[in-house]
Length: 167
Ligand SMILES: CC(C)(COP(=O)(O)OP(=O)(O)OC[C@H]1O[C@@H](n2cnc3c(N)ncnc32)[C@H](O)[C@@H]1OP(=O)(O)O)[C@@H](O)C(=O)NCCC(=O)NCCS
Image (cartoon, rainbow, N blue to C red):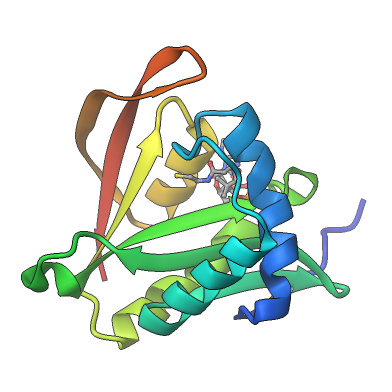
């Protein structure tokens, strides 16, 4: 079988909101990967794309006109001295998993955040999540520690591990 064609990585536009919302929704409703309890609709996703696409970067991966995944930067914390740091998030359609989409998204996102002057990127990963840990460590993130039982979802406590990369 031939390798899948590399995705095109580009800045998200408002019209990507429906595809991003559709990719994200099952992770909200069916898993603890996201700590949100209700999946954002298209309008809310469009607001997030506008907000973080302006303050940071919001990228989508596209192949043959179809959005396969997205990644974005967002504030780490609000207080002013944290502005040089950011959080990152990434979601890939399971139908396109393990095809290099996540690596391509981060391969574009992290240099763009660095070019904005961001110094450190943080990823909070609800545990367990072997795919996300391997992706982040493969992109140069190092583990920092674990917030134990920091979230309650789907009838259980969940830990969140934090990973960091200097940009
Ligand atoms: C984590 C995620 C973004 C990875 O995206 P992806 O497009 O499948 O990743 P890639 O194909 O670019 O893989 C890059 C590397 O990540 C690691 N990886 C990806 N999926 C993996 C899996 N299922 N198991 C183990 N390692 C995995 C591998 O090291 C892989 O490199 P390799 O294929 O050369 O071995 C994707 O699985 C996803 O969206 N998961 C659900 C949402 C999520 O967990 N987001 C992160 C929240 S913190």
